[in-house]
Image (cartoon, rainbow, N blue to C red; front, side, top):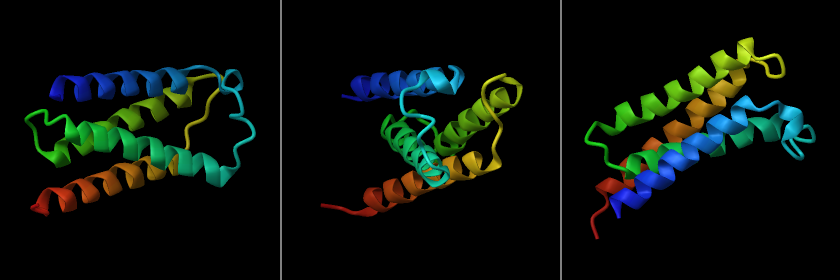
Length: 115
């Protein structure tokens, strides 16, 4: 089961990277997103990446996994600074941080509950 979750995680990470690097006008309905929906999309995507990443149990601490996923988002935003069709946004980073933080909190709460 761990192998399948890790496969889903790395496919998801690759998909997010791909969608982050293609020009935004090539993504259907991307331009129609409002400012708030864009930030919500960032938070949800990074919540998903964080939660799936935490389920992979890579043998490192959950905090480290969360920081690595946030670091991935930071790298993407740095690439956006130099990308001709994308823009670096601090609020995207904040939304990413909120998403992975919520994933970590839920993961820790769920891990402490015994059934």
